[in-house]
Every structure is written in structure tokens, then in C-alpha cells.
Image 1 (tube, rainbow, N blue to C red):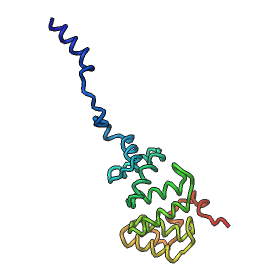
Image 2: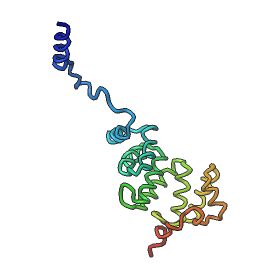
Image 3: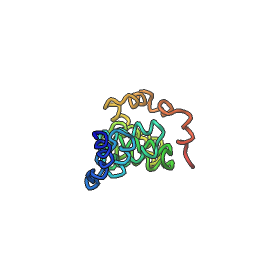
Image 4: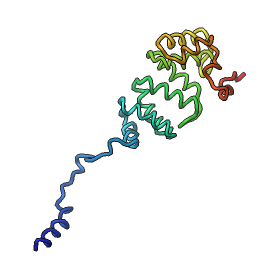
Length: 178
């Protein structure tokens, strides 16, 4: 008899279960990449979410990284701005767009980010994605160097020779178009 009661209880349990749908997802994935992307698609940002874009980029999922970085950049995270620049400058998860890349670097630089200053300084020195202004470019590189950015210090010590910090495989990208 005990077995029959147990069997009946197991069969009836789903029918007696409470409907929790009014409470939304009651046991969501919390630590998956998919969850972070879903949160970004819903407009959420935050330090942990923004940092996940790095892992997504390094794994090759540039579309998902772009989703995270775009929201975070628009929310003022300068590190996400410099990553958006990297994605745009290399056509990852979108079209190659040097103008957009330079604009992300400019925004990060204006907010005081040393990497943004360095990158935008190089953009200015090359005239890549922005009108060429070697003097302002060097000033921004010097600011980044003074703030302790090692690659900026290296470039300044090399008398601003851009070959010091750029692989020669990228020279085609930075050549004048006229």
C-alpha cells in the first residue's frame, strides 16, 4: 500500500505544482557567456559584464563581444571604448571602420584613459580615421607615457617611430590613401 501511495504522489505532483511563471525565470543561468550576452542585449552593463567582452573576443566570438562592449562603451566604460576601437579597426564582428575606431579612441582619451590617449595619439600621428595632427598625437602619447603606459613610454623613447609599436604586417592599413 505504501508503494501505491508513493506512486500516486509522484504521478500527481506535476498537477499540484504551483505555476511560477508570473515570477519570470526562477532559476536562471548566472555564470555563462550566454547570460552575459543576454543581459547586454537587455541593456545591462556592469564591471563583470563589461570584462566578459574580453573573454568573448579572445575566444573568437566577436559578435557577442561587440554586443557587450557597445553597451558598456555607451555607458562610459573607457576600456570598452578601446576594445570597440580594436574591433572596428580590425573588422571583427563588423566592418573595418577606421573612422569609428578613431572616434572610440577619442572618446576614451577625452575621459582620461591612457590607452585611449595612446591609441588616439597614434591615430592622429598617422591620420588614420581622423585628420592628421602629429603634434597633438605626440602630446597624447606623452600624456599616456607620463601616466605609466609602457607602450607609450616605448614609443616616446623611440622618437615616435611608429614601426616600434606596429607590426610591419599592418603597414598596408596605415598607408596614405592618396
